[in-house]
Image (tube, rainbow, N blue to C red; front, side, top):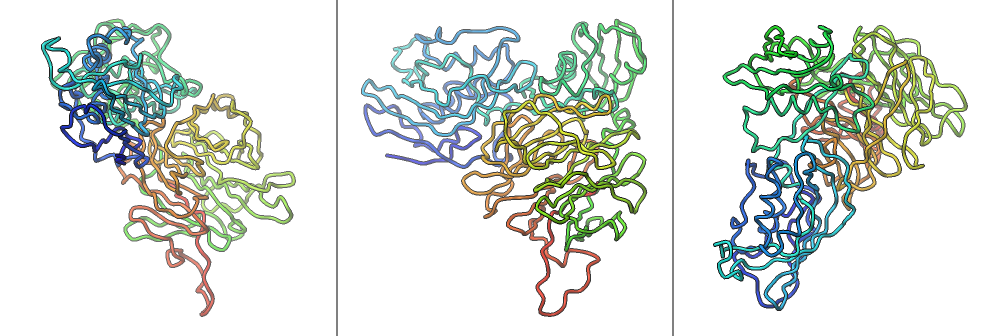
Length: 605
């Protein structure tokens, strides 16, 4: 009997026959393959994973619970998992202590259950290795290479009363590793964002962590401060700075009833640095309200209201509310949608010509930043055109040389000061940085020799997403010294194959176009572990994608993105094709003439 069920990328969502024990012999049972991901809202969340006897004798539910058992506070992870393992096999799983406790997070692809004549069942689960969840809340790149795990199930009744519990099932011949499904990661952890200062200490840069829901709320401050003391995620280190060396937390952070006390042993008496640390802690505590008293070696700093500090030190200097633009007949035009702000094109008509794709932004001093791919003549007919200045920009500089056969949509690396702006663009498979004069400089990448096809910059200007060689990466950006260097990229393991376009939709989420057997768009966390399908019925490959990046500092509706597939542009929320009637400031189309399709939509913010 083959029974396909929904065993998707988010874990064993098993739909097996309930209450059936382990038969003496029957056919192999297969769970999967299911969809590539499950909508985020359908998984009920709880603080503690189920116990061994919660599933009674249902094989599929028991395996799902086994792959959740490690979730929670790390110091009891082995105890929770070993409760599922038969007494005679508990020693096969070797305990580790302290910071050595690590969970292998996997995405389940398929489970095969084969009943044996000795009334046990052999289980084979096909997995995708997502990463290693460390005790500091980071999900590091995967270390294990296994694509399949095999173990067995037997009835607890076989024990004849061993351990005083004959109900339910046991795992036999278990893997010698703590496994955690991505379903359990979503269900029993809260994904958190903490912040580190950029390498030039001008802005805060997000860093994703996971906090077990079993950790009491009153310990949240302590956990966050320990994360900050421990430093940033490995891939983010080239673009940020941690706390001073040898910084330690003196005792635990304490408090309650709206007042929190943090005592640090930290070198230096730089008051500006201490003030920046208070801002860093305030934003890293999320929406926690109340008062913070920071002590440095028992010397108290002035008490700070957390909410007031966040309100007075904004994360990103940009106005709320997206303005939509697109390209129509070689020129940039506003796109009009009801209930949304609609601006004017900040370019003179003479500068707004022969445009293929564009990126417009606002600098801190309200200058317009314009970067466009424009057409010319000849085989290598594409060039980069860049202009900055007051609205409207009238003078554009163009890249030199013979031109390029292909150029991606350029992106700006946003800054919070008035330094000259810099951007990134992909041309003929090479990543380049460009300046306000459209000069292009190759950016070395520590990647296998594969063509780069897309780049997207986060709102903080210190992180990028890349597509190279058909794989998705994130990397930190260092802007010290006037140049642009990219740290070692981290590959993200996702359900999507052959990604074609990417942008940042939120601080810790990417919007990515690729394939799950057919063209699709997914929202994917910055570590690749959490993913949600946004559209799976595209029908054609996405060649252009742009998103409006939301964050905790700007309370705007999330999920706004636009894309182009097969020469037709679309928008989300609500989903609709972008018709010529949405394009503003165009001449009427003569009767009998088919209007052009709007293309390359983008946001100005």
